[in-house]
Amino acid sequence: MKILVSLTLVFICTCSFASSKAPPFNASKAYKNNASIISVPVRVHLLKSEDEKNITAQITQQELEEVFNVVNLIWKQAGIKYHVESASYLPASNEKQYIQAMSKNSKLSRREKTRAMNQVCNISNQTTDVLNLCVIGKTVNGLGGVYFGGRKPKVIWPTLAKSGKNLLNPATLAHELGHYLGLKHNAEDDIYLMKGRGNNMRRKGRYEYILLSEREITVSRKNAIKLFN
Ligand SMILES: [Zn+2]
Image (cartoon, rainbow, N blue to C red; front, side):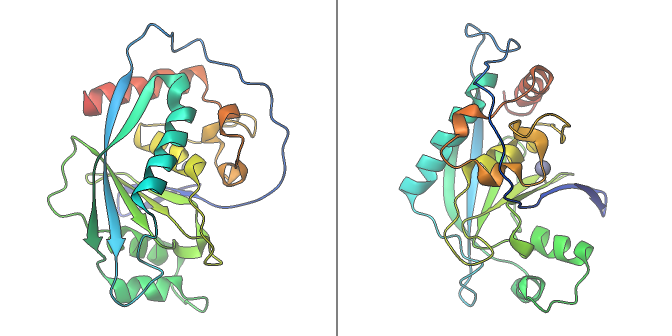
């Protein structure tokens, strides 16, 4: 889903849990093994709130490392490797607005909820030489992740499901990172990373099957070089 909010490009990835059959792994031809590995630095902002535990990112350093291991397993076919440049706590901004947006009885419109998600993670002195990732407790409406484009691009990714259960879904994070590198949703089979519609929410244990198309590999490599190398 693509929504235009205040000149900011936002990709929202909803959750669904239908089953699908995975085709066998098929390494793409677009990235040859002898091509250089592109390194993408990720600055991780772990949101923290004194008042609302559902805003605070609930993840250990080891869990974060494991999540990036899976993200890199998925992106290996493109020859792109994400590495955590730094991880530090960031106090949440506009908390009241966010708590209101998270509430089951919230009267806020979808646009207002999206704005609340954007504003809860306010990165000061944001630079564009790193990929900015905000890790939050819960997203509004249990979204698996959100990418905000524009002048201050960032990915917001949750550690908790809507129910409050621990989530840590690396496939959805890998999907949002794809948006950061210029990829849009595609109309391919369910097993493709950029399919959208929550398809990555149900990939647990089958990450090695997730595919990028040849064109997506070409585009993401070009953008990763342009942005970070
Ligand atoms: Zn998406």
